[in-house]
Length: 102
View (cartoon, rainbow, N blue to C red):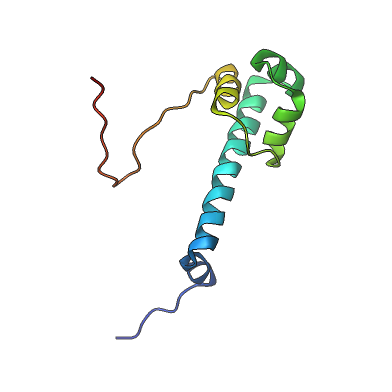
C-alpha cells in the first residue's frame, strides 16, 4: 500500500519549533478576532473600551492588530469583562487532568 504524500503544512508542523510558533500565532489571532468581533457587535470604540477596562488605548489597538501579545491575565480579564467574556481554565482535551477543589 502506498503512503499518502504529506502536504507542505504537515511537513512544516512536524518540526516542533514550527508547530509551537503556529500554535502561538493562532492563539494571538483568536484574541484579536474575538476583540474585533465583540467591539463591532457592541459598537464600542478603542477609546471607550480602554476607558472602561482601565487600560491604555495603545493596549487595545495592539491587541486588535495582533502586535501586542504579552499582557497580564488581569489586563486581559478586564478587557474581556467589558466585552462580556471571561477567562475559564479547563484541562486540555485528552490530558486526563481533573482538579478537585477541597
